[in-house]
Picture 1 (cartoon, rainbow, N blue to C red):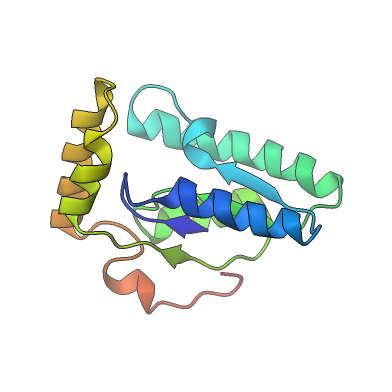
Picture 2 (picture 1 turned 180 degrees about the vertical axis):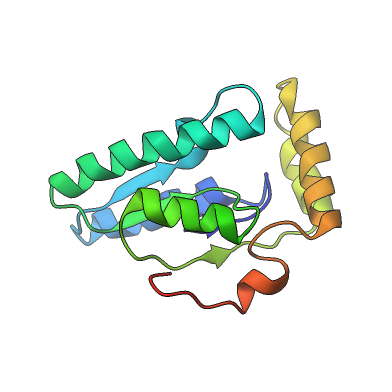
Length: 145
């Protein structure tokens, strides 16, 4: 599980890990969870993402895949538990921490209308210390993570 605020590079890091696994001929599933719950407001999208993840991960597991590379901004430990349960396999969390100035630089190259909102949300999340990368979740150990 690779986590961090929007623009921190989760998808790029996940794609690089997937490439390395493929080079080693190791079976894996790459899941960018944003795409499993891209539907309106955050709460609706999160619930939909968990439901979709449970089905998609089950399909991968049915094919014998046990290694997943997962990218998503995990806001808190409850969200992390929900993802763990839906994924159905033990996992480790790696948090990406990128200064806001670098995120601004990265997002300025993308001309879509939603990027300003994404940048505001990233700045707000960083300011509030949201995410399992920040605060207590880094030092909290739970079985299966």
